[in-house]
Image (cartoon, rainbow, N blue to C red; front, side):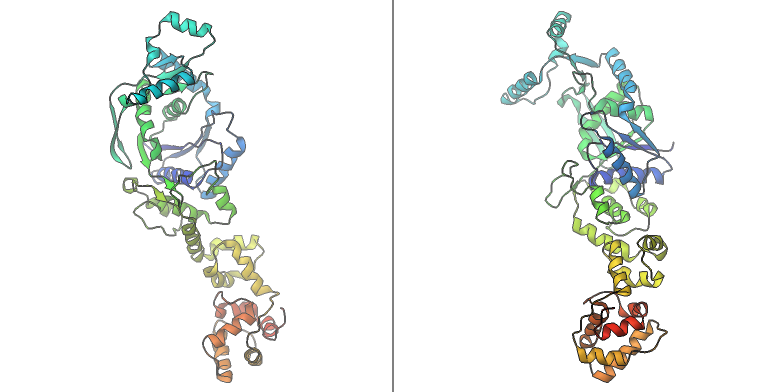
Amino acid sequence: MSPIVRFAPSPTGFIHIGNARTALLNALFARREGGTFILRFDDTDLERSRREYADAIEVDLRWLGIPPDRVVRQSERLATYDEAARRLRDLGRLYPCYETAEELDRRRRIQLVRGRPPVYDRAALELSGAERAQFEAEGRRPHWRFRLEDRRVGWDDLVRGPSHVETGSLSDPVLVRQDGSYLYTLPSVADDADLGVTHVIRGEDHVTNTAVQIQILEALGASIPAFGHHNLLTTAGGEGLSKRSGALSLRSLRESGLEPMAVAALAVLVGSPEPVRPVADLAELGGLVDLAHVSRAPAQFLESDLDSLNARVLHGLAWTEAEERLRALEVGGGEAFWLAVRGNLTRFMDVTGWWQVIEGPVEPVIEDAALTAAASDLLPEEPWSQETWRDWTAAVREATGRKGRALFHPLRLALTGRDHGPELAQLLPLIGRDRSLRRLRGEAA
C-alpha cells in the first residue's frame, strides 16, 4: 500500500523552520515511496485560526517545493468528529464530567501536597443520574473525557524504536469542551482514520499523545498507523521555536532572500547522521533521510549556518537555474557573468550589485595614480578574453615593477570601486575597454 502522510499545522501564525522540518520529513517520505502528502489544517480553534495564515502556509510549502497532494480543513469536517464522539459515547468510553476549572485545580493541588500524581480521579463516573441532572439544572454543561484503559501501550517508533507509555499514569483526556467544541485529540484521530493515514511523522513532543490516540483508534475499530517522532529544533539559546514569536518563520526566511533548497537541506539534515550540505534537489534530499537514524537529542538551528549553506547553494547554482531569475531582475551578461559572480553571492539579489559593477556607473578608487596611468596606456585593444587580464597585468608589471598586491589591488579598486570580488580575469571582458579606460583615469563610468 502506498503511504499516506499528513502535515497538520494550526493556522494561528506563520510556520517556522521547525514546522518545515516536520512537513519536509512527511513530504519527502511520501514522494520517495510513491505516496500521498496531505496538508490538514487543524483549525477548529475558530477564535485564533485565520485564513490568512492558512494561505501563507500553502505559499510556504510551495516555496519549499512540497505542495500538498490534498488539502483538508477540520472546520469543514465536524460531522466526522460528531460521529466519532457518538460511537465513543455508545461504547461507554466517552463520559461527561461536570467539574469546573477551579474545582479541578483545587483537586490537583491537594494531590500534589499529598505526594500523588495530579491525575484525574474519575469522580464523574461515580455520579448518579440525579446528581448529573442537578448539575444540568444549575446550568453546568459537561466536558467529555475519554476513559483510558490502564495498560502499557506500545509501538515500534520509526525514529525511537520500541516505545511505550503506561496509560494508567495519565489523566483521562478531555476530548470535548463544555461548549461542545473539540480539542486537538479527537479530530486528529478521526481524520487519520477517515483519511487512511498510514504513517504519522511528527515531533517528539507528541510521544505521550500517541498512546492516547492508539487507544481511541482501537476503540473506533480503526487501523493503527505507524508512528515516528523526530527530534525538535531549538534556537541558539536552546529554546523551542514558536509561531507566536515569529522566530525563523518561513515567511521571514523567504523574504530575506534565502534559497528554498538551503532552508530545506538544513531543516532536514541538522540533527541527522548526514552532514549538512547543499543538495541538487528534493529527490536527493529525500534519499538522505533515514528516520531510524535521526538523533534523539534536540538539534540546534543556527541562522549563521543557514547563511553559510545558502552561499554554498548559490556557488553551485547552474546557469540554467539562474537564467530566468537574472532576466526577471533585468541583469544581463549571460552565462559568463553568472559564472564570474556566483562564487561571491550570499543572497541571489547580490547579483544586482555586481551587475552595477559591470554596467556602471562606478566611482573608481585611485590608490596608485602612477600605476593606473601606466595601466591605462598599456590597455590592449579589444576583442578581450579571460587571458586579457593575465597578459595586460604582465605588461603593467614589467613597466612599473609592481607585483602581487601592490599591482592587483589598485587595479581592482580602480576598475570596480571595491576591494574584493570575483576574479578580474572574468570581469574585465564584461566591463569592456571603454569603461575600463575611463575608470583607470579616475572617471565615473
